[in-house]
Image (cartoon, rainbow, N blue to C red; front, side, top):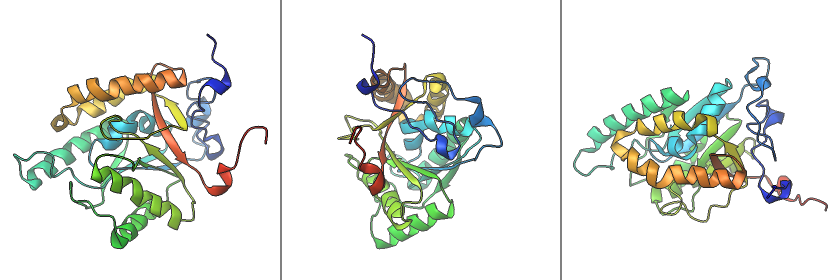
Length: 259
């Protein structure tokens, strides 16, 4: 059955900000040549994740697409994943996981930063909101991606809400998108507004994910992210896609076609 424009959701459209659209809606297109033109505006992208691996697993294909187009991509990890192996000390795990993140970021063309919170004991309070807001605004982002806060993992909840506060305090000067991680076991209630076709970058994203050897990447990929990419691809009409929720400013929400 032929799919109509109303039968699928729109892909992220950021042509007004110089990316030339990651993938135009409703028909999926390749990255246009104009996106890599040095005369175009270069964007500053910040992707926030609770632990090393979260940005890569959740939206690594999209981040690679940005970096390939010449935009600056920063992964801002809330923690160093210190508590992920009870058989090792926090220092040992932090060393392992930051090394994995460095390799993964190199594969995707991103820069790693750390917010200094502790895995499994992240905090959402006035001081941490102020710290995160300053850290994000210092990067002068055009777009911030972060984890969807309706999630079974407390660190993911905090990671979603801190950038939301920064967005509000910055008077919504940057675009805010939420991404999903392990939907079905962690992320909950995630209804996408936008998709990005990652078919051509799927193997590269997988390589970046597999750099996180401490995270059982083979089973994690096969059980969660491979089927999720394909499911989001089915929704979007491509082989593989990543999905997002665009948190719009008030004036952008009141838009229903024909009214």
